[in-house]
Image (cartoon, rainbow, N blue to C red; front, side, top):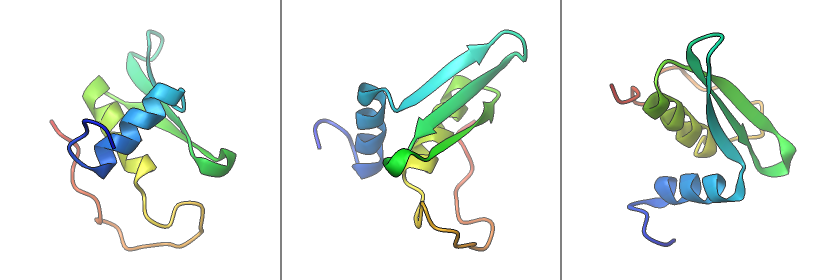
Amino acid sequence: MGEAADEAEARLAIAREQGRASVNFSRRSGRYRWTVVLDGGKSSHGWADTEPEAWWLVKESLNRPHRGTHCRKPRGLWTLPPE
């Protein structure tokens, strides 16, 4: 999938190019607001303290297993965001 190192990076690059993923700084809160529109029109969004952390959360939401289902998994399946 292009020049991406792995499939997760490729999905993130495609979502950014298509305008389905965005990270914006909010002066009012002093934090970064991230938003992703997933397949089927569902969206995920949240807040992060730094821009790299926000993009990491976008990447995680794009590559979340079982997305679109109401399956609850045990906590702690994801790695920590980069510092």
